[in-house]
Image (cartoon, rainbow, N blue to C red; front, side, top):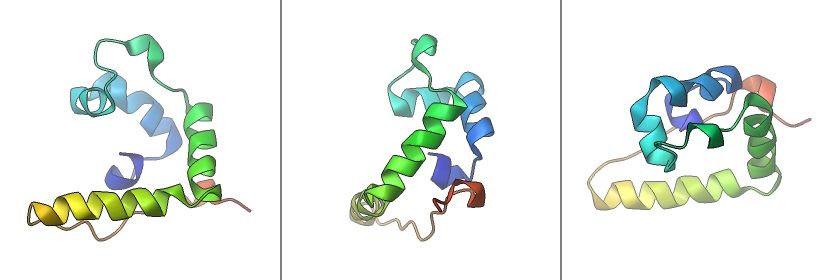
Length: 84
């Protein structure tokens, strides 16, 4: 969701509190105590990048969208999130 909507880590930390859609999509609706903090989001992003998981997720999402006649062209991380 962070990549799709172009959200920074701090904004992504707060977004599920403000946007019901984000909570529902993540399966955390009604369990506000389980929402990740900014550090968890940062570490998860690094994990996705380190193991090239984000690219694999992107392929699966595109397959699902393609089956529905839709297309997702771009996804990028916050430049501060790029691993060095």
